[in-house]
Length: 243
Image (cartoon, rainbow, N blue to C red; front, top):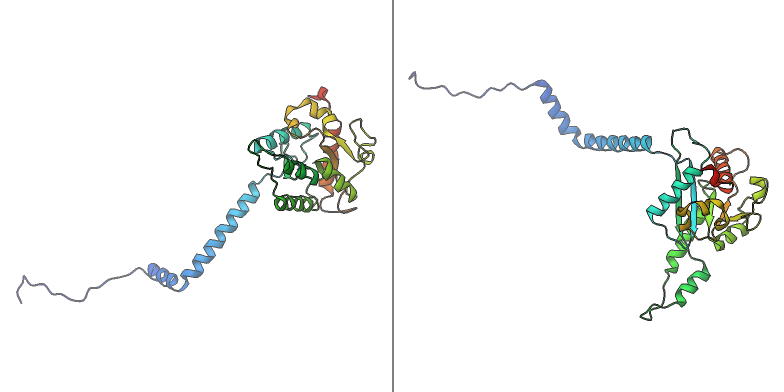
């Protein structure tokens, strides 16, 4: 055999055992691994969001013909945080959240539809959308997540007729000068309305009231309702001298 010739034999490769096992595992369990990893990531992200989510000390609600912008909602919330008597949850920050339900009364809808613009086009209100907003509003006040309400007079009368409101005398011990009757106060007659321009994005005939607790006696939201009663008192008795 010529010394320059090379002997070509079968190629010999030595594969790492760990890599071989990994390759076999991936071949047999690829989809199970992908699905499991997906759910682990989802659970981790949700857990982190829950841990980082700041709960409000107080929720409040405005329902009526005014659609507030995010800036206006923020400004009213700022006033509520200033009026808040204490940091209820003890996290070092007073947090108030205002929920807005845009709802027209039957009379307001009729008035809008009776009007015409310069081109003679009649006003229009999506009655189905308005009805849906009312349903969402009413369902929300059944949750117990909110008790302090700023309501258009028509909605106030509606909720009062359902026996859902606390008497002012049972909360405050008296009926303030701003009261419209024994259940509500006229926002335009309250000092907090006169003091802060941010509050005047709400109509002056808005009625401030406190819902009855949904469950008598012990409940999971009893502590929250106690906060809301204290906050309601602070709004009713707000004085510009405390600024």
